[in-house]
Each structure stands twice: as C-alpha cells, then as structure tokens.
Length: 329
Length: 265
Image (cartoon, rainbow over all chains, first blue to last red; front, side):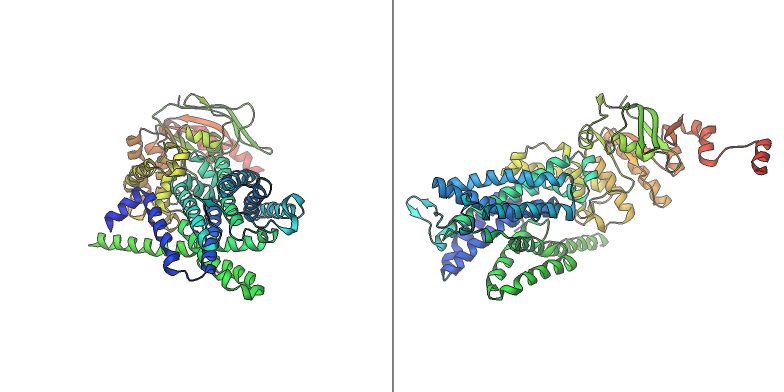
C-alpha cells in the first residue's frame, strides 16, 4: 500500500487512468436505465464546472457569481457553431474553451479593483448580461433555444444516446480534473492561495497578484467553457437561456461550498451529491432553492471548508497526535 | 552598496512620514532601525519593498537595480524579502504551504509543464518540499507542517513568518519588529535563530525593533529615525550617547534657566 501511494504521488497520471478504467466498467455493472447514464453525464458536466469554480473561488478567493454566464458562453459557442457551421463536438469543444477563456479575461479585470461582495455584484451583472443578450438575440435562437445539436461520431459509431454519451463526457471530465489537479498542486496553486489569503504579503514573496488573479479567471472560464460544450452536445442536444440563470449559479456555488472550498476532491464530491439531490428533488421544485441556500449557509457556519476540508482535517489531526505520542515515548 | 536610497520622501496628506532620508547599506551588514512610534520606520520598509510608491524625486537602488517605481513582486524577485509587523500569515494554509509559497520566485518549471503535470513537476515539488521541511525543522516547526497556520501560537507564528521570508533565499532580509510580543527567553531564542540563518544563507539584515537590547547586541550599525528624518547613524554605542537620539526618546535635557522658564509659563 505504501509503495502504491508512492508511485501515485510520483505519477498522478496513473491514478486518473485507474479512475478511467473503473468508470468505464460502471455502466455495464450498475446502470439499469438510460436515466442513470444521463444523470452521470450531468454529474460529469457539473464536476467540470465545479473544478473550474474551485480555482477562482476556492483557491484564488475571488467571489464570482457570474460563472454561469461563462458556462452559457461555452454552450452557445458550441450551439452556434453547430447551427451555422455544422461542427461536431471535436471542433466545438476547443473553440468553446478558447472563446470562454477570452470572456474570462473580461470577468477577471474587475477583480483588480473590486473585492468580496462588490466583485460578486460586478460578475453577477456580467453573467446576467450574457444570458439576456442570448435570450434577446435572434442569432442565438433567442427564447427558442438551439435544439438537436449533433452528437459526436467515432469510427462511424454515433454516440447519440445517453448511455453512449457517458463514454464521451466521462473522459472529458477526467482530463479536466487532471488539469485542475496538476495546476493546483504546483506552485501556481500555492500562488493562488497566497493571493486569497493576503495579497500584500504574497506580493512581497514575489507573486504577481494581477497576473495570478487574471490567470485564475481565465483557467476557470476555460473549464466552464468545456463543461458548456459538453452540456450542449448532451443528448437530446438542446440548450435554452433558462438553463443559465442565477438559480444554476447557486447550485454550482452550493457544490463548491458544500464539497469544500480550496479542496480539489471536495468540489467533485459536492458536484456528485448536489447533482443527484437536485435531480431527485425536482418534484419539490418550490423548495429547491431554499434548501440549497440553507445548505450553503449551514456549511459555511459549521463546516467552513466543506466535506473535503472536514475529512482532511480529521486525518491531519490524527497524524499530528500520532507524531506527538511517538515523541512522548 | 546593496541598498541605497537618496532623497527618499513620502507624505500622507500634509504629514511627512519620510522626509529626505539618505540611506546606504553595504552587503553583509546587520543594520538596526530604531525610533519612537510614528517616526516612519515601517513606512521606510514599505517604500523600499514597493508597498507604497515614493513621492517624486526619491531614488531607491537595490543590488544595482533602480527599484524606485517597481511593483512589490518585482522587488521581491530581485531578492529583497521582508516580514510584516502584523505578520500577514496565510492563516488558512498549512504551515508547509506557507513556507513553500515563499519559494515561489525560485521555482524553475514553466507554466505549461504544470498544466500538463509532467513528471519533473512532481520531482521538483518533492525537492522543494524536502528543502522547506529542512528549513522548518531548523526553526523548530517541522512537527506542525500539516497544521493550519492559524493553529500556531504567537511565538511559532513569528518563526513561521521568518521561515517564509527566508524561503526565497533573499539577499536582503528586512525584519519589521521580529520580536514584538515575545517573552525575553523567546526573544533570545529568536535572535539566535536569526543569526544562524544569516550565517547559513549569507544574508544582509535590516531590523526594526523596539527592544533596545536586541538592537544593541546584534546590530553592526544603527540608524535612528524621528519624525521621518534620519537623526543619527553609527555603531550602537555611538548612537546610545547621541544627544539627538536621547532627545527624541526621552525629551530635551534642560539647564536650570530653561527649566525655570518652562515652569514659569
């Protein structure tokens, strides 16, 4: 076990390959109907968004409430490319990532001067502006949305049903999480954290605050763009401006906060739990927002670092106590 | 000269916090800066490290570079490290991450290596971690490496800030009241560690301190500031007997006639 841990810490890539192999087997063993495949694809999309949101919110500490706007940009880049150019996922995914990354710069610039709730308001305005722009634009299909966006075809096999699309969304999710993992575990992640904790002292350590703030926004925007593109192509391939409201933003925030701000695995756990709960409680539509809002408040009050941080803390304390006991002897 | 300021000025509104200070510091020296509260010591640090922009006409040179208008992170990258009076620890980060973030300017790998997560990243990260653990055990915090910085005691926090400032292997280390709030035993301990680190890394030090014993024992030369002006400079024993310094700290020595005049009013 110790040896295995050591190998993984040296080659984190292997861990993701193992995860890939496991997830590859999951549908054949556990899934009984298409709904479960569809739900897992949704979970994967949300994991990508949560991983991105964790970079800018959890690590870099910039409060952004406009992330859903970037997600919409990703979706509509993919949707419009399909509608006007007939591109498939392999074309729209990189394009969505690049376009959303550019929008990320626009969202990041206010963070040079604004902080906390003020930045939240600015980004909220940005996100809503994007949604309203789409809703009122004939070019984007306005309130009709864009429908029957194509699913990718590999070697003549169309991935057009939820159970097949699982095999598209899952690798994309794993690659995204792998990128976020390697970014956040390197010196870049530490620089993000120091910017969050204390910008002045971070600058004294030679960290360029503006550069890292804008970098966090761009990176997380790229994640949102990728998620948006994968979501747009998700069978039956329908996107509508109503999928990108503040309500969605609250669920994204709930994922990251509940799972653990500044905790890579936490965001994933949060995305899984919240997506499942969100889908199972659809009949109780009126209470959903109330419940998610309450979840955010309660987690911040009683578990400020979410599930991930909470579990981490238990292990850290355990190791620390063990060390002290050993020293005592 | 490692650090040189010429005609350094900074005014907040009408208050001249730093008023035409010329300062020269050769490499390898331990310099103390003393002065009553509000005399501009911390402002001096903030000006040199780029936190404040100096007023026009000022000139600061560090290690041959003109750093007058440089942003703080560039000054840091040149090898000027500092600590803060109010510590400014990264409260919500583990102790080891606190120190490792101080290593930032020395990280060798490129951004895209990190994005892709190449093997050399993890190898280097491990090297950095080992080196920083060594530094932590040197200051005596190795056991606490995984805990949050906010869980440390006051004395340990002072050590951690010191370790974080050292992590970037600076040429010049500026300590803003490193021993504030410590008990006498801890002060001695801290100063011992600082001196050991100085020898180990070949540092040049500037120390702001109110505990005069520390300044008198460790510093080669002392600069005294009062109302933003440099009023004296010299070896500790010279400064101790300087009339201007005594006046700044204790007030003016009066002869009988002046005393009578003052009392008569």
